[in-house]
Structure formats: structure tokens, C-alpha cells
Length: 270
Image 1 (cartoon, rainbow, N blue to C red):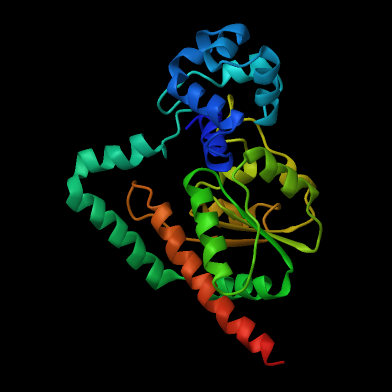
Image 2 (image 1 turned 90 degrees about the horizontal axis):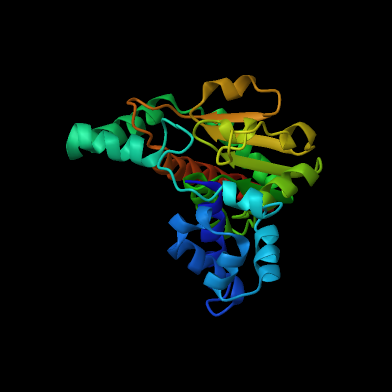
């Protein structure tokens, strides 16, 4: 999914149905294939607003100017040639292996994790959740869904953490976080730490070089264990080429919350 498409969807989720930003975002989404061909005047006319309103909207969703915005506009399936792209990977795997192969891949990854799970790391993270007062959890796209799910599960257990849909606001939080902050990143590939995954050119990311927070990564990329920007790495593996991380993230977060409940209850008794 491209950067502009993701940011417009976030506007739909965050803004009131009758608001101007919602209307602009929905109009742009409904005419997404045309945006790259339109001048700012033409786009303003299409959205029935002024050019200054379009300029303000573009800046508010994280683009420097109209040129920057329009570069992100063309929709190209698997634009960044990512082999983990949903259509290429999951839909392609189902087309090749059928439903039986799809379910076998999921079951295989769950069984593999069950046998190889490192509970010491799960416990370290659960104890950190007890000790840290400021906790945030982030990801992009499916991984951000895992962060939201994790936030909800912890809230059921009286632990309230932060997450943000906007990639711009995620970066701002990470860069400004202090030593009193725990940041948990859901990233199947590990690339969230290293680069901007949904921008043109996959530019290198530097916010983790500057943050003072403790950084925990939940990933299938074993190389993250050696990354100096990562303080704790919770690993899982894939037994096939199909990426099952949206499902694995749910299982891992259940384990973390379960252990958090245990340690938080122990702290309450002290």
C-alpha cells in the first residue's frame, strides 16, 4: 500500500463523517487514479474547496507540498517490489497452493512457535510493561492493527498504552521519547526500524538512532537481534514462504498480556 493511500484511509478513520477533511479524503480516494494527472487547481475544484484548503490538507497529512503529494499518488500494485506484499504473497500463495496449503502454512507457523517459544523474552517484556509508566506500540498497516489489538488487550487489564495511526506522528513520538519510555514495534520484516517502507525509494530511517526509549521489536527477522537500535527482540519464524504475521502477532500479544497479568498481580501484592 502506498503512503498517500494509507494516510487518506487514516483521515477517514480519524475525522468526523461530515467534516471537510473527511470529504476531501473520500473524494481523493474515489478519484485516486486521477490525482497524479491533476493540477492543484483541478483537484481543489474536484473536491469543491479552495487551493489553500487543499494545500493545508496536504501539509496536515504529512507532505511538504503539492509536488511531494502528487509523487505519492499513482497506485501501482506492489509499487516497491516487496516480496511480502499482501497480494503477491498471501493471495499468490493461495492461488498456487489452494485453501489446504493456506491453512497448512498457518498451522505450521503456530506449531513451530509453540515448540520454540522463548518465554524468557516474553517475561522480560511483560515485566517492562509493569515497570514502565509510558508505553507505546507502533507498526504500519497490518502491523499497526496488531499494535491496536495489543493496546485493547492491555486496556482490559488496566494497562493503558499509546499508539498512533499516522506514520508522521509515530516518528515524532519515537524521536522525542525519553529513557522513561518503552516502545514496542510490530514489524514482520524488521524494516520498520531501518527504513521508510511505504515511501518512494525506501529512504533510510534515523529516528531510532536518536530515541532514548527502550525499543522492543516483535519480528520474524533474526537479524534484528544484532541491531544496536533494538534492546529486546521477540522472534517467530515462518515455515513456508507465506507470511502469517497478522495471525502470529495476535498469538504473541496474548502471551505477553497473559504474563503481564501474572506480574502485575504480583506487584499489587507488594
